[in-house]
Length: 90
Image (cartoon, rainbow, N blue to C red; front, side, top):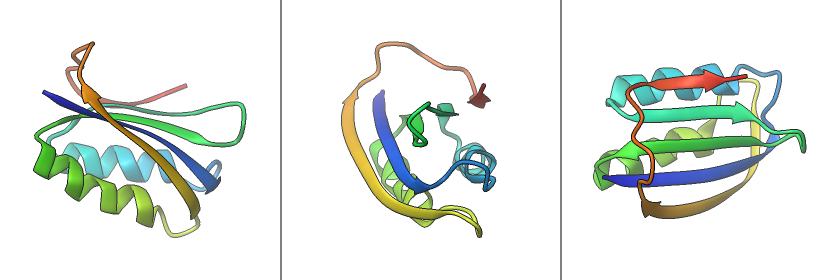
């Protein structure tokens, strides 16, 4: 299974960005998590088929209505941990 790991910067905390990604990932059948990090960025880890993960990248770059995505650091890797659903971590 392929894993997509991203750190998203911009106005992405307090604007329903995590909920937006959780909904998109669930709709696409992906598993993993999204969480805020102390720097003000959002960390995303999603697992699935490469073509579905590429589609998910569009959601990551677009963001929720109030979000302003300024940058996305992306790393493609082999999954080390297997997740069973997609969740927002606190």
